[in-house]
Image (tube, rainbow over all chains, first blue to last red; front, top):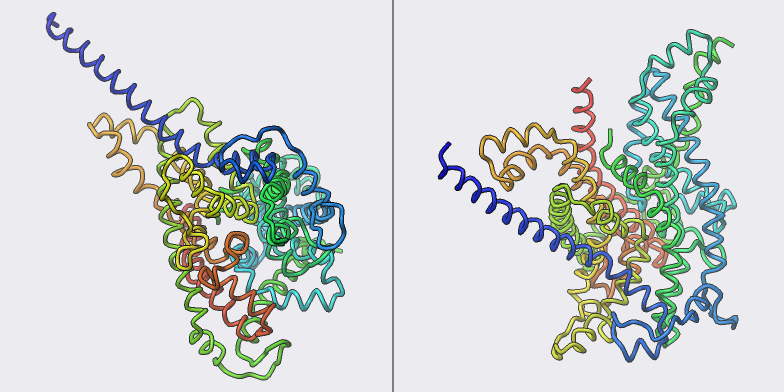
Amino acid sequence: MTENNIQTYKELEKSSNTKKLIYRWVLFIILGIFALYYITPLYVMIVTSFKTMEEIRQGNLFSLPGSLNLKSWDVAWNGQGFSAGDVYLKTYFWNSVKLVVPAVIISTILGAINGYALTKWRFKGDSYIFLLFLFGTFIPYQAILLPMSRTLGFMGISNSIYGLILVHVVYGLCFTTLFCRNYYISISDEIVKAARIDGAGFFKIFFKIMLPISAPILVVTIIWQFTMIWNDFLFGATFTFGAEAPIQVALNNMVLTSSSVKRYNVDMAAAIIAGFPTLIVYVLAGKYFIRGLTAGSVKG
Amino acid sequence: MYWLKRNLPRLVIAPSFGVIAWFVYGFIFWTIYISFTKSKLLPKYELWGIDQYFRLWSMPRWHVAVENLFIFTILFIILCVFIGIVLAILLDQKIRAEGFLRTIYLYPMALSFIVTGTAWRWILNPSLGIEKFAQDIGFETFTFDWLVTPGMSIYTIVIAGVWQSSGFIMAIFLAGLRSVDDEIIKAAKIDGAGIVSVYTKIILPMMRPVFMSAIVILVHLAIKSYDLVIALTAGGPGISSDMPAVFMTQMAFHRSEIGLASASAIMMFLTVSAIVVPYLYSELKREDDRK
């Protein structure tokens, strides 16, 4: 190799390095701009919730509050203290907790058993049953709202948390069964076969063998169901009203109840409160959250 | 005893199967049936033919709703898929802060549409929101009043919807990109292909199934979109940002037109089915082929 060749090679390397550097920077700037787009609404919500209405009118969307004013958080959670037309979140937040806990537990347990039975104890017609569950995850709920509200009426549980638990278990079942089925199908049948030869039965295999290795999919399923039920508005708004309503319905009522003066600071504090539980779950267990989303999307 | 043992899996599935058969499929049939009757406030079981569907399609309000759904769905898909792919490809360049950025891009997905709508309703409100901010920093003639302008409010729903869901599309594309074999990319680079053509000519075409999934999910989300409309515009101003899901609920629970509401619900159901059934068919076929 001649002197000359080495020279040009070095120059080439140098220029490719600068090119790489510019390329990296452009990359970061674009990614940063998108990050701003996603984070700005949250920032606006947080700063607005700490401002007084005076500050909101004086300043602009992005200006910082003069002091950490907790008044609007108090009003959002506890109300203003007078009874007529006072809307606040406290009661409804606990309504949602009372709804979410049993609905998530029941639908997850049923989904796990269904998924196990559909994959490890194959029987004639099981794939058709699975298909019914699978398609059930896609139906627009408008097609079942009317009969559901009549059924809840017949059962005497309309406008109650119990009614909502039933609704969320029923329609969540399709998702939980799908998730668990897709997980169990990837687990080798050999383990189950060996256990069956050893004389273990359906439930023994489920509790002793399947359940201990199901933690990953159970976390995904629980997070998915929790998010879906906590964030539900359609069922809550259709089947409950007044003091029985879940949190999203209460938030919407609160924002829409325009007592002539808009209280944007209270609205924002309320919105953050209503979004807080799912946000926390997302921050703590984002990996599983994303896995649930993708598991729910790449079906079959 | 033997019979019980043999049929135990079936017996375990039976209650869930029964529940789904009744509450999902039975209810859909009930709604279909009611859509063929004259039912108003209460269901009437005497058949009336397909007149509700004629009524539905002769209503200007339904046309507004369908047109809005069309605008919303198209823009929602294009923007979400575009942003999703761009972000996924950029994040796939071995970025150091990937985990952090991904968390930021995806967090709106954890928020409900009601929370999303509430936040954007405040940001987009003409008197104190983004319009005032732009005016304050010097753009005194800047106006942004889509939220209260008939014909434009539907686009505010697009803005908020894309904000909420595009991170999710990024996540499925990123998962897709990660499953592409590195060897293919290396081989293409050795053959002299640039980074852009590696993506446009080789990787993206390989991700056709991911595109399919993303589009099916987005269409499905768009047709079901109800909460976001309610929280952001409540279908207004007037009925200008009405959508089929809002129309259905209005007719069913406020106008005592359950026959008509059922007909609109069935239209939604048929639209979703027309997209989902072929998709599921091809997905399940793919799975069978792999076996």
